[in-house]
Each structure stands twice: as C-alpha cells, then as structure tokens.
Image (cartoon, rainbow, N blue to C red; front, side):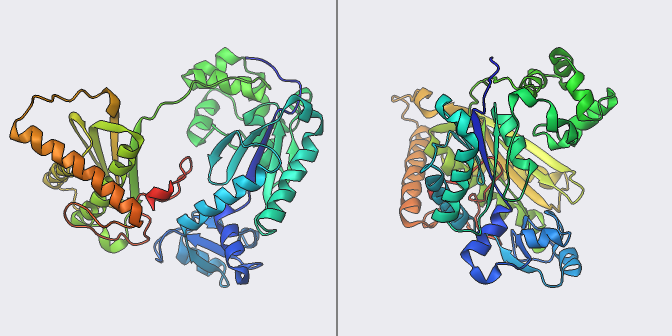
Length: 414
C-alpha cells in the first residue's frame, strides 16, 4: 500500500455504448432516440438507450411498451453482440496508439497506467485518447476519460462529466468533488450496502469520509470495506488475483417459453455453451447448479455433485435429473433459467486411471474425446454442427455469447 502523488491512472468509459455502437454502424440512426433490446418482444426491457433517448427521459431497463408510449419516435434495435465485441477490439487498438491498456474492465471500460514521466501531462494524454477514438473509429462513439491516483478514483472521475467528458480527481484535492456524490455513485456501494451504511447513520459522502478504515471494514463485514476506504482516500491497494470460480449462463425466457419444457430446452443449450467454455479454459467441474426463477425473483434451485466431469453427455444427464426434481416440486413455470458449473478442477490435476477398463470408464473416455472433437468442429465452422440430443435456437440468439458486465465473449463463443 502506498499513496501516489500524481495522476497515475487513466480510465476510459464509453457513453451509451450499445446504442452509440448501433448509431456508428447504422448512420441513419444518428441524432435519433435509439433503444437496444435483447430480443424482439414487447415484453422485454431496454438494455441501452442513446443520448437522444436519455434526453427524453428514457432509462435502461424501461419496458418496451412503456418506452414506446413515452417516446413515440423511439427506434428499437435488437442487440448484435458479435459486432459490439468486434468494435470493442478496434477501440482497444485505437487507444493503444496513445497509451497501453492495462486492464479491460468491461466491453466499454478500459484502464490505463501512466508512467511517472506522463503524470504531469495526464490531461493531454486523456485528450489524445479521445482524439484517437474519434479519428480511428468515428465521432459517434464518444468516451469519457477520468484521471486519478488509483483505479477507483479514475473510474469515478470518468463518470463525473458524462457524456464526452474529461475530469480528474487529484490526490491533493481529496475529498473535494467526492463530497458532492451520492453514496451509490461510488462503485461497490450498491443499494444493499447503502442501506447497511444508513442503518449505521452513514447517509452521505461526508459521513463516509469521516469513518476510520477499521470502522468501514466492520460495517462492510469484510476486508473490502477497508480497501474501499483506502481507495477513496487516494491509496493504491493491490487486490489479490482472483481465481476462476464457475462457468455459467442464464437467460430471461420469452413469454411462450416459460414452461418447464421451455426452460429445459433453453438450459440444455446454455449448459452446452458453458461446458465448451470450461473445456477451452482447461477445467472440469464437480458440481452443476440450476436456478429457475419466476416473475417475483422467487423460484427453485438445485445442485448435483459428482466426480470431476467435463463431457457433455454426463453434464446433460445431470441437468435432466435436476429438472426431474424441479418437476416433482411443481415448478411448472419459470421466467428465467440459469446454469452454473462450479467447484472447478484443472484438467491437468486429474489423474486418469489407465488400468480402468470397465465399460463405464471406457464410455466416459469416449464421451470426453467426442466432446473435444465437437468443440473443434463447431469453432471451425462458427456454428453448432455437432451436439447431443435436441438443439433449439433461443429467441434473441447469442446463447452463451451475450456480453455481461464483467465478461466479453471470445470469438469461439459465437
């Protein structure tokens, strides 16, 4: 832990990325209110809105039927994740003509580390990054750049003057502009943590700033509270490297898929995609979890444990047994389905018994081999040519390849 004296971090945060990406890719949409939706349905919500739509009061999450009523001129575009990932890679190349990207934080957020010789001209570098994006990609995709002594403060600065902003939180000016923020403006303070702080009498940034690090650790219930205090006060704190914990996918189901049979068909596809990702990363799993949720976010969950497994037939058989449990417990309708492979074991740590010639062991080895062959074939041809059992196309597409907040799909996922 140390306390920097300069602007060591530069954070790039793109404005209304999915909607701006569509305006960039489709010039006739520029200047018009645009909403991006995950699937062509009146029952879904907006996952992104353009600046023009925001100016009319539309927000992310607004249901389509409400959005149409609120903004009759709204143009709805179904998300095209593969194109957004391709554009993301072009953006990285443009930024790196100015400064290397230290970390990709999400599809539209990147962190750069500045050298000591660059700290005095951090603002100039920020402007050069914005110019590189405008020149190399196009003026429609604007970004906001934040500068700070550490990752968190640079990220907060990037949010302060959106859209198309450039702002800094200097270490010698703290707390400064931080005191004008709401607690939930701070990354890591969601509504649940804000409520916990409120119960302790901490309702604004000034009260949070007066706390001591050990107090915030106690209120947080973990060391993350103390780390947050350090970052807000301008220190750099190295977080331990995280380890892969699971591979999973989920999907909100279309209205006509919200039966147990529809959820099962979707779950089979999602599990096959998660298992393929797991194999490519070199892991097997000892557990499969299934969640079925209704419109009130209640529902059913189940888990099955087994010896380290990574072939599709074995995992799909486990999924089938979980759905039989859900059926017995009368979980007949589901708004969303999620599957997760966890309790991971690296394939390199699995010791195969070469002298086990039982029919079961030989069949398992064949299924593992065929699962690998299927992966190679499907990746080569960029489509699912080989699979086990029925295969459906989930409305909205991109099963296993949707962009999540902290995950950018690989090309092999599409």
